[in-house]
Image 1 (cartoon, rainbow, N blue to C red):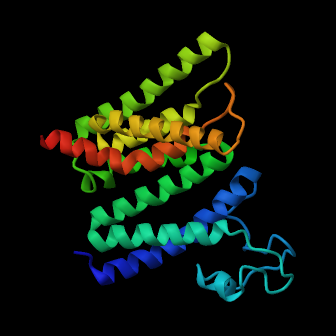
Image 2 (tube, one colour; image 1 turned 180 degrees about the vertical axis):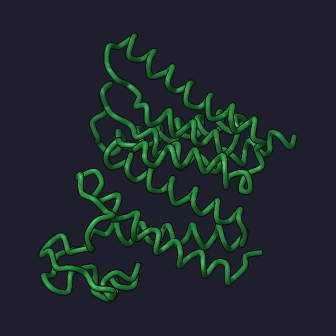
Length: 251
C-alpha cells in the first residue's frame, strides 16, 4: 500500500528536484552554468523571483510564458518537473524509508541522463559516476543485490560495452558506441548486480530497434550512420530489467 504522506513529500521533493534538473538539461549542453547566479528569463533576462520558480504551479499560472516579455517557457521544464514528482511520489510513497530515497535518486538521475542522451547524445561523467557511487552506497538499502554482484556488474557492464566500442572502431574505422553508454551500464550494474545486465541490455536494444523501425515507418530516413540514443533506452530499461533478474534468481 502507498503511504499518502510519503507520496506527498516525495512528490514535492521530486518537483523541486525536477526544476533544477530541467534547468541543467537545458543549460548544460550550451555551456551555461546552473549553480552560479540567479535564474533569469531566457527571453528578456529578467531575474526571476520566488513566485516565478514554484515548480509546475508558476508555469501554469503564467500559461507557459514570461509575465514580463511574454516569451514562451520551454515546456521541458514542466515535463521534467512532473515526471520527477511522479517518480518521487511513487518511490517514497511505496517505500517511506532509505530504500525509497534510493529509488527516487535513481529515477531522477536516470530521467536526466535519458533526456540528455535523447537530445544531445551525451551522458556526462558528472552524472554517471555519481550514479555508480550511489549504487554502492544507498543502493545497498534499495535493491537486493549483494556487494560482490554489484562490483562484478559495474566492471562487466563497463568492460562489456567498452569491448564492443573498441571492436566496432577497429572493424569500421569510426566511432559506433559512446563510452558514456559503457559507463551507464556499469553504473546500472552497481545498482542491480551483474544478473540484471543481460535483461537491461536486451530490453534497451529491443526498444532501440523499435524506435528506429517506427521512425522508418513514419518516413524518417534511416541509414547506416543513423544515431540511436542507446543511453536513453538503457535508462528506461533499467527497472524492468532488474525485475526480470529478481524473477530469475527467485526461480
